Image 1 (cartoon, rainbow, N blue to C red):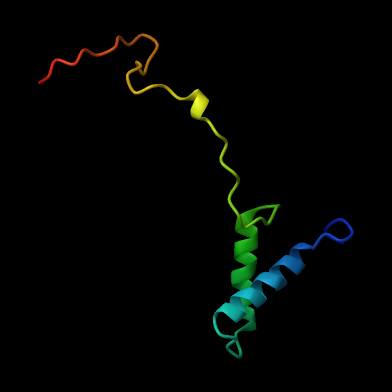
Image 2: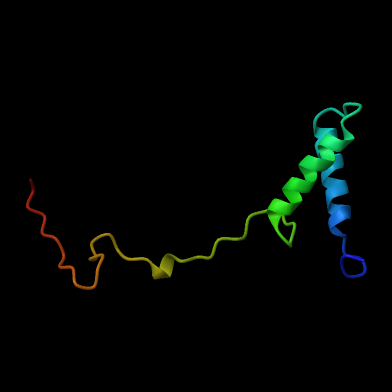
Amino acid sequence: MDGLPGEPTVEDRIRKRAYELWQSDGSPEGSADDYWTRAQAQIEAEGDTGNAEPPVAVDQSSKGRRADEAVGEDSEPRADNGS
């Protein structure tokens, strides 16, 4: 068995994805292998989790610099000379 009890195996996920792709294309006849291959590639590209949604972005707003702060530690703030 590929996963924990009740957890879908990789093959289960591929089968489900292939079916979804097939349905979204209007359920054409005679293309089962093509849909399986596409689904398998997608699942493998997603990695171990098989999660189709991207990871949630971490709020880093408190880590940012203000626009008027110097970029480097040794940098001096630039004066606006108006030119």
